[in-house]
Length: 147
Ligand code: B12
Image (cartoon, rainbow, N blue to C red; front, side, top):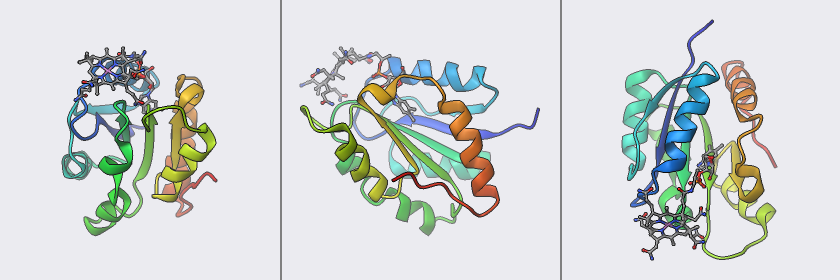
């Protein structure tokens, strides 16, 4: 099967490590070649790793509620550094407190993520297939943007 490289990690000063390990196992078991940067990863560390490994997707987690600050400008930074076609996913507990899930997800889609998973959408079900489809679309110059 064709190897597809992806980069995974928890952004910012966030130290929540358990979900990250589960994501590594899930996407590896689904056939992706996963570079897992672990916790407390900066935007540039994600991008450096994606460039080094030729990753076609960056999967960002944020669990401690500060995703908006940590993810600000991420898509622009990818473009600045030549990652024009990288697929960007974001998941976790993205904001502090109870906020409407759809509104939360839309906020991050507007920031340039291709798919956003929060609340009940965090459960790992068909994300590997979605990712495969989005990477294929991106290769064909049709980057997916939900919403
Ligand atoms: C254990 C824990 C800790 C431990 C972490 C230990 C460690 N090194 O992992 C300790 C005690 C250190 C900790 C600290 C803090 N924590 Co804490 N912690 C938790 C707790 C109880 C469990 C987290 C966990 O392991 N979950 C199990 C895993 C399997 O689930 P998960 O992390 O959500 O990951 C899954 C999904 O989110 C999803 N997912 C995640 N990312 C992505 C990405 C993609 C692309 C996709 C598709 C899916 C996906 O898939 C994952 C696998 O199934 C949660 C509450 C909870 N029940 O979730 C709070 C919680 C995450 N913590 C919270 C907070 C506030 C903190 C602190 C700020 C507390 C404080 N005031 O100090 C600090 C932050 C420290 C820091 N710098 O990060 C809040 C966050 C609030 C928010 N976002 O709204 C939570 C939700 C508790 C709460 N209800 O208030 N915490």
